[in-house]
Length: 503
Length: 67
Image 1 (cartoon, each protein chain N blue to C red):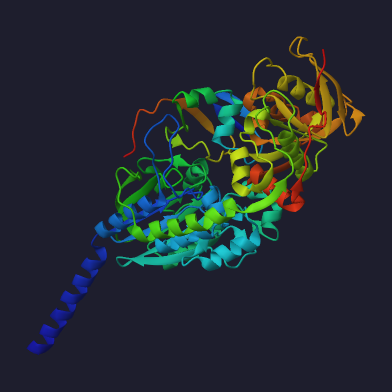
Image 2 (image 1 turned 120 degrees about the vertical axis):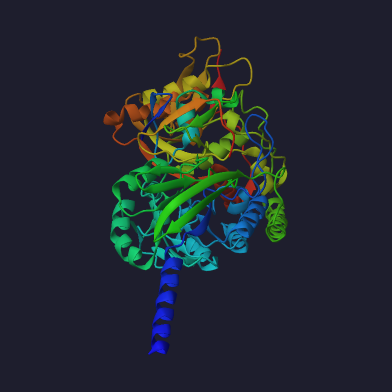
């Protein structure tokens, strides 16, 4: 009898210890990055401050954070496209680094679609970690969620992506359907909650949307966000949901420490750790991958992609028509299937000498990450753009236009706003009331160099009904020019009288 | 898409970023001069950051460092 009581007491004691253990607080750490965009090396900041970032230093910081506390490492999208280090290898270099860093999960970002669906599938297959997107339908390799166990706590991680941007380049997302992030969360969260103790939403929707999701969708413990490149120094709390985001370009590592008790987060603390060569040690394995890909990048950059029989001149692009300006504008017009094209001389920075053309020559000629846009303009608006282009004469001017598909003359002595004469488009005189499709670059479409006429079309949308005809924010103009040189092989581009000065 | 830079409304094309909004508002010189972009909640924004309809961007000096 006495023996039986001892056994019963023992069982009760064990049961109480087990329930105590279950209720005891457990510490978790979430490490996170977003919007890396392939910025592998440290970056100089505007304003001349010391360089920040560098993915090998980021990996070093991850190593130290993991040594302090077992962690999950998450990426909130837009990792594989952007900087040349990523683009030259269509994101393969980035996934190699992410595998070495042992990421636990990533949500697909809108720029993950920039290389097209086949490349995205190859990157997903290459990744040692799951790539999530609960509101992406039609690509089975993208999973809605995963459950990860850390320190006995089951973490449900679900991914959602903005619907907006993928729509701008529909061919890159052909066959895919994007539901709203909110509806996808409402669909999957009940089943995920049954499998997990806490819920983490990995969101590539942008901080304002993350706040709305926190308000509208019950049961989200943490949102790890991206897309808006928001530098949230310390976690925000909206309702019961903690929201974090870690800036951009590997310039910061987000560290969120959670204390979980009885399936609830009872305490949290978070910081962004700045990544800088001056303050961090690097991860040698990641550094080796960087060096390997830099070695691989060098040959393509020095590879001959074509030949030019004449010097391609960028020295005069800010004062006159040049053959390099003509070639670039021609590529823009053809790519966008536009009637005409205008680029400012200030965007063209380097001449290309007669002989072999190497890829790096085009990087020098077009150093900015600018992309192609085409808009509907009336003839009057096109004339206004040209007038603006020749409004600052007498010294080199960034705004001086290089054009395609049109010709015009201008009279420097005439007052600003009435210098342009004899405009033709497609060989015919400009009709001020006719609507033309005009290709330009994103900077000018946003009003840079004073070219306000392009963005003003949005104010007059009732007149022109959806002025936007072409918009590929995922392909830099220089890559279009490189493709055109490769296709044409031998260039013999002349100044052909598109822009003439008259007395 | 309409966003606001220092409370000035600017219209932009889809896919454009914080830098385009600042350009459209004619304030890139202020960035070159050392001002930074912040959202309505006081968080700094990268110039390559995506825009969300109705977003408010403010240009000011950075009073807080990281951490």
